Image 1 (cartoon, rainbow, N blue to C red):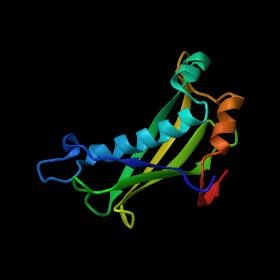
Image 2 (cartoon, rainbow, N blue to C red):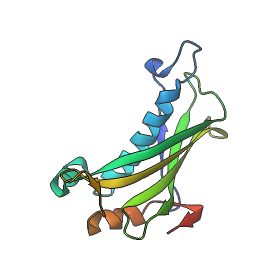
Image 3 (cartoon, helix red, strand yellow):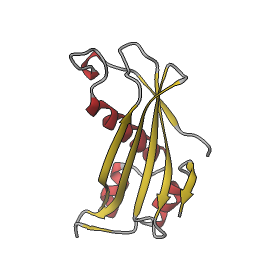
Image 4 (spheres, one colour):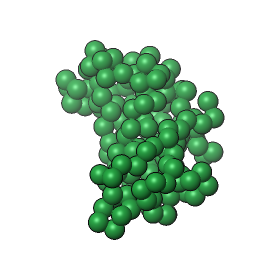
Length: 143
C-alpha cells in the first residue's frame, strides 16, 4: 500500500477563539486515522481486548505549518517510519493537508503495544504484524 488517508470534516467545536483549528484537534485527527487503519485491517478494539493488548504513546509531536479554518477541505494520511524487529515499538508520521495542496501540519508519534494485564510493553500477536506490514512506509523507513 502506497498511501492511506482519511478526509476530515472540520466541526465548529474544533475551532479556538481565533477561528482556526485548536492544537489538540490535530492529535485527535492522528489517532482517528491510525485507529481507522487498524480497524480496517482486523486490529479492532474487540481483538485488542481478546489479546489483552493495546497501543500506548511515548511521544506525540506536531509541527504546525499553516492554519486550518472552518470550511477547509482536510485530509490526513499516515505512514510508518520505523518499527522494532518484534513489532513491539514503532514510530508513525502523519501529514495533514488542507484544500488538496497545502501541508498544514506534520504529526509524529512514538508508540508501542502494551500487555494490558501485565502493564508492560509486549510484542503483538502474528495477526497484528500482518496488519502492520500493510501500513504505508516513509521514504526513510527503518526496521
